Length: 178
Image 1 (tube, helix red, strand yellow):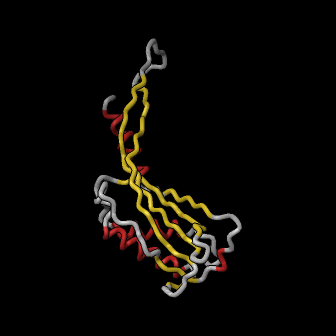
Image 2: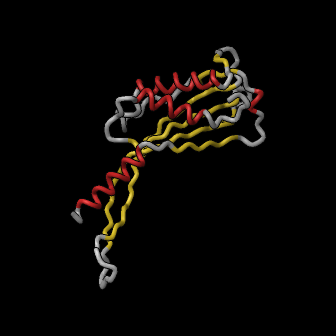
Image 3: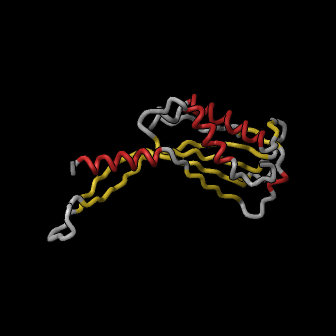
């Protein structure tokens, strides 16, 4: 039983982390985002990486592009190829992380030796990074990053999760139309 408890806690931790999306943003100081009305995709988009084709593939990249376009329209932007105000690009980053879990399996309060055990496990953390570039100044003015722990198997509802993730990232875009 003592051996199963740490394994159970490890599984519980992994499951609890896998559903949370952490969103962070950064922007160029002093930028008036109300001046931007239109957008287009940057000409040179990053190609799928070869390190993790289960998550970084053409299907998911197309889903991300569609979700970004929907959210840009919700924010009041018009997609145009004729001198857009903003150029949009995105990147998919998948990092392998290592975490240590320390637990005490000694059942009594009095100890004459250390009863702590450390278990190490690895997991994949995936991030979508969305960039907004001022087309006239050729300057990155905003970036939004959504990160979460990835399961080993792609979810059956990948399209829905991508839509929700992109929506959460784009909700942080600094504009008056929300």
